[in-house]
Amino acid sequence: MVALALDIGETRIGIAVSDRSGRVASPVKVLPAAEVIGLAKSFLYIVEDYEPDVLVSGRPMTMAGERGPQAAQAQKIADALDLPLYFEDERLSSAEAKRILREQGLSEKQMRGKVDMIAASLFLQSWLDSRQERDERG
Image (cartoon, rainbow, N blue to C red):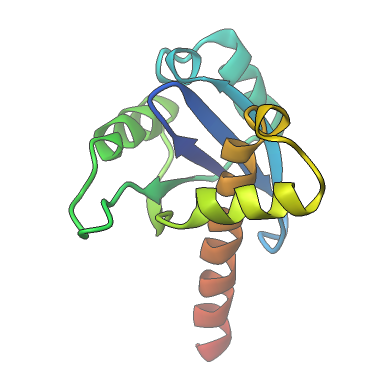
């Protein structure tokens, strides 16, 4: 099972994907939000390359626990791709992604194009891990 994850932002969308076994998440790319939401060729090529079975979106919740506006965008994309949609809490994934990139010595400017895809891979890994734990418990 291949999972494709989207970290949906107003300007950019980070994309990550799992391996075929559904155990390991990897960052793929960051695209302009308009390209992903508009199902541009640049995004559809990624979908074609990885052939995902499911779409995972960061659960767009505010820190107050309210549903954010990106949930509707994620649903539109999932519907257009005819994929089941799952949500995973993403509230701290961008902060964690920045911490990881900072540890690697990247400047704020160098991070700009990478944070979203790293964040997507972090919450995708969390989703994969929790799914595996459920499977192991039976």
